[in-house]
Image (cartoon, rainbow, N blue to C red):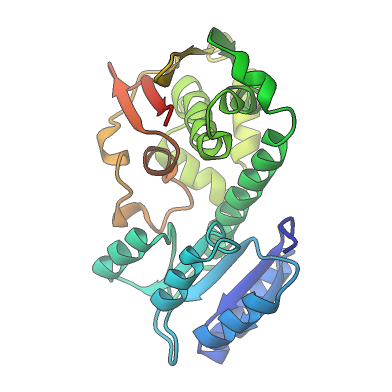
Length: 300
């Protein structure tokens, strides 16, 4: 399967009007779309496709094979399990959202949807898929040499430096691909939400406007934030690896973000901490006022 098709979206919906309007909005935004009118048709397309999809936009209620059945098959298949799924659901279906989250659908779209929110959610899912694939590709290069790292302390400011440190430290862990995405999320959080004081609401607004990266770059040169750095301590022992991350921000109420809640399922972000906790680390513990986080990776 070609895994670098970062602009291809599979749209699955049994309503022809929805397929048409979703395809139109996404095509206007530069995406290549493929459509299926139910779950069985979607599964047939996936099995014979050779280019790959960056995300799947999946209606929950469909004849023959519904969205939850498609999602279950995706998560059980090694070629498809990492494709982010955007589940479409009706307003107020909170219990359905919980069920979908438990099954692995971390992105949601409310029907009827707004064009701006559709594009923001698709961009978030596609960006996650792209970042994951690029990290995995880069980790595969020269991975073994970093496993010689035993102890180290690192200081960084920018998103590019966070990416470089993610590659280095994840390569020093027993399962680099598992660690990389979670570590990247925590390091970026330390910059944007910690040192640069971009709030959750700020990021939601910036993502919908397409200005998040620009705002980060502007704040990095703002005298109010320019001297702030993130400190990372790495310690490796026979039994485990510990990574301690500290930013110079005011901290935050981290408890609500340890679990991914239905209330944030329709936002284009807010998954990072819970996904890191579930998928990347054996433990994740915030400390102090919330500007410190300690993660552990066991040597199994």
